[in-house]
Length: 201
Picture (cartoon, one colour):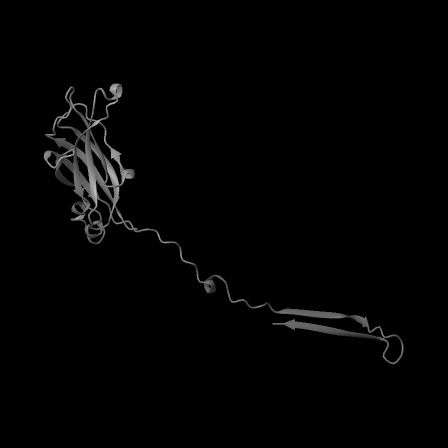
């Protein structure tokens, strides 16, 4: 089906809640098309920014060609922090917050003729994990590629164009020789010399 390539740069986040009790936060982002874990793409970890991490990491997604076709599709950006004791005591990395970006919003300025768009910048509030409250801001930059149409299978060629009408070739056959009827001697016996010709077409 027709689609565009969305080039999305996760620039930075600011004023995030500090969810690590015993160490500073080391935050990374995981972006995906909401509901499709196969599309997950992760940034590197910012080990210095703590509640104001920066990544400038670019990911790519295939999205619908128009805002109308996108419907209620979302991009999901999950912000997580590594934990110092995660490896030693079996603790997993901890969720910091998440952002839901409507794909239709990103496609709103796309050219109706199917061309690409220049880079744009946008900011979205970060919702605290497992909460309806917002804390912090995610900054992104993005652009859209031109509409890519699917390749159609090659159509079967017209047989009349590939092969001429089937007509047998003209053939000539000539024979000169002698044959014997084989009826013995007598009234009907004897031999006959002659020529036979055969033509078709």
